[in-house]
Length: 519
Image (cartoon, rainbow, N blue to C red; front, side, top):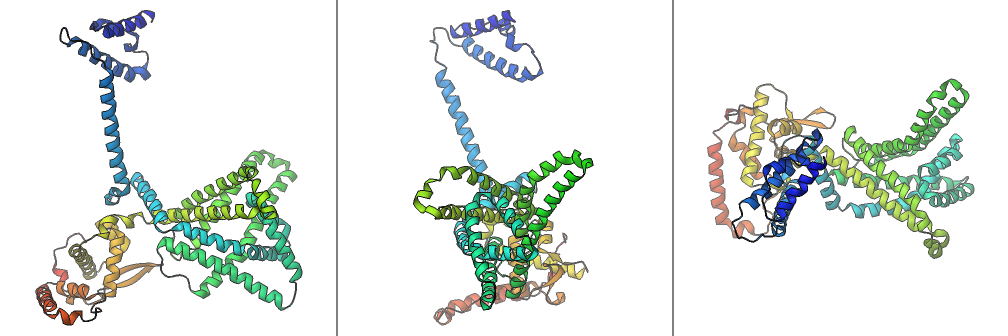
């Protein structure tokens, strides 16, 4: 080995002196022997590099001065950096815009689309301001919520257990909870009878329903839902949530206590003590995950798949636990607030904490929406600039497919079916089908809970190409500009005459007669 290392120094010494080394000297070096299989690739690369340098020295013309290799190395490094920059720009362009034109359904592409849509939705829908609004509403509802919670807990005889559960669930807000519980205790001692109790309960319920209604409105904005729950349904759903939440908290705590006592009383079960300890350590994470998952399932006024809600719940719940840890660890560094705010020092920290919690919650909601609807945003940039002619072509194809399937006695298609079978973007299909339903070309048919398929709204034997084009052209508001029809009557007449002439020609073509094989 020593001889091989010495030969290596000899090779580089000859090269530095401008003398080409003999190939036998190169091959004799230690680095070009097969030390083991892990160094094989490294040896080949190093051997190639040494050979190239020796060949450069070998073919240098006589009398030519030796040139420094530093400029060449800088040039090669610059070329590599330029290539890396070009590839990075291309990858970023693909991730931001090009990925929406990629119809492949691999997990890598779906992940890029989900991240893209999550970031874009989070920035575009102004969720930071909505998180601030929810922070304000939550601050107003803290005392009513605690009062309602402890009133229910006192009715079941578990007031102290609920208090313990709250401190365990929110360890970073111990001072805020203590202040809130003090307010609640004073209120419940004074308001023990009479009309004041009835009015107080109504105010408490209204405050909580108002908070939950604002949460629902924010979630509906994230999901693009325009219709909220009816007032009656809000009262029923939200009241059920308010009364079930403390019961679930009591049950979860009771299960933990029962499991601990069962292990103590039964020595035969001591072998599962380590597993139970791990389960109790993981329990806060699991409960937080399930809480966020339930929120993402319950609040949006639309159907949310459990898989997407659960993944978003894991993300938001984990971020929430990390936030708890950071607040607990950082409270010793914010003691300066005590000198400024005194006994109210917890208030600014509570506001910051609430803002961050709602930001995490809404980020999880955006992630849930994005992961469930990534295929609706394929070709999103193209859809926003789609030409009227291309839009009409796609609408006619959708109508022709619907008529053909109706004639053949086959089941009607949903928006998802159109997107999957014909590689059309769901967002565009939804937009076109809504227009055709309003134009009374298509009729929705319920095929499941909140799932609709579409069939012709008119006798297929009378549906011609001209009929479809005429309906689509007349769909929407028109004639609303004062004096426009009168001032430009001649131009409008020419346009109308030529349009009607085209529609009359197309009236001779039935949609069922169009050449369409892929149905």
